[in-house]
Length: 199
Ligand code: Z5A
Image 1 (spheres, rainbow, N blue to C red):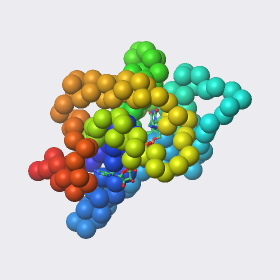
Image 2: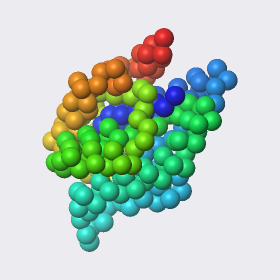
Image 3: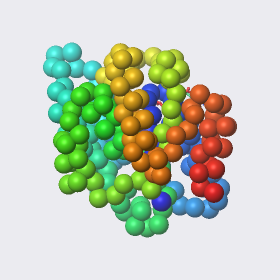
């Protein structure tokens, strides 16, 4: 089973994934925990390029999209597809829905560009996607207690509001795959709601 986790920053994806990882392990299931952009040594290098703040040269939106998909191609081929072929559960922190929400809804790139990339480079979509949804300010407050801000975290609230609308649009289009979780709740309740989706 391929499960992805989506949402704006600080909504609790990493926290929920860790709990589900331990839950599946306790059940004796083989489970792989991974993330995007990243998940392999090469894709993690691309992640560094994407997140680092370069004051000398602004990254174009197209470059950002293509780097996301370069990392994804590597990640799919080296980690996700082999693990699924071995019957493992793959828990992935972000996947293609983030590209729609951030690069299309957030940056304003066309959906046609994204579809072209998905059709050609994404042979497997998640079986279930958890969208952890919370007001932008709440996630920002949680995440920013960490200190230095990466290139995405430096964006303004209005950008993240567009990203959140992007996730809402996917959820409206595909409610069977994408389950919305109320991420304003306590961690244990978010975890319990996620677990109830498997029953
Ligand atoms: N990106 C993109 O643009 N296009 C793409 O295609 C892809 C990604 C794949 C890196 O992602 C950036 O890449 C991302 C979008 C872009 N940028 N942004 N923004 P990332 O996933 O690495 O970055 P992130 O979204 O900023 O992750 P995060 O800040 O680590 O958030 P999180 O994983 O959702 O939250 P958390 O670490 O689990 O929790 C944050 C804090 O809140 C922590 O102290 C927890 O203990 C606490 N927490 C968690 N849950 C709760 C609840 N329920 N109550 C109270 N406190 C809580």
